[in-house]
Length: 211
Image (tube, rainbow, N blue to C red; front, side, top):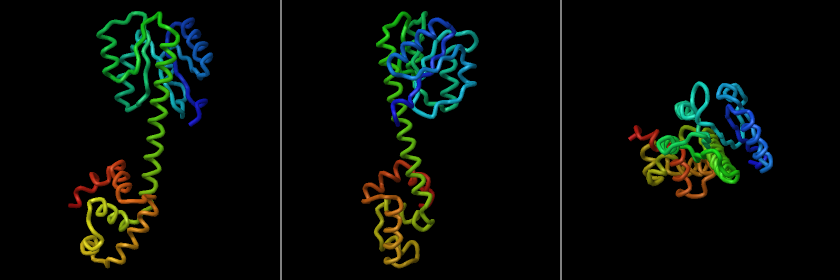
């Protein structure tokens, strides 16, 4: 994912401060999207690339901390950097415990904000890359036949071709053919790599009822 696809959403009800942050982020080569309220942000089109949210704690209506809880409840894993002119230790602890990557009290150094935002973008990029890799693994698994899937599970459970053949009522040669096709389709070059793929897809857990 190219750096240019990264964006920074900023929510703050102070228009002058909002514009100031926008200029700062643009000067650092970042792409800011500025919102005066949480409602404006929710009405916008979500970014498809790596993102970071800069969020004011105190705003009319729902607070930034309330919105953080809303995002968590909706399973939205967006890195959040909080900014506030009225911070205190309990508030900071609450935000960090809930997953915020930064909590800055106004006035803060420009570099402190940029460092926190770049950290958030890096984290979100890594998350998106992990999700994309997992999606590719799922797609490979989906092309396997039912018999190939069954053999895959038994292979990672450590069973030999002869044992698999006995369980499935087929010849050992047939097992070898299906096993070879399965390894090719899922692009695993060894049993160890196959085990890592199965672990990422949580296939053994899903099929534990088989035994």
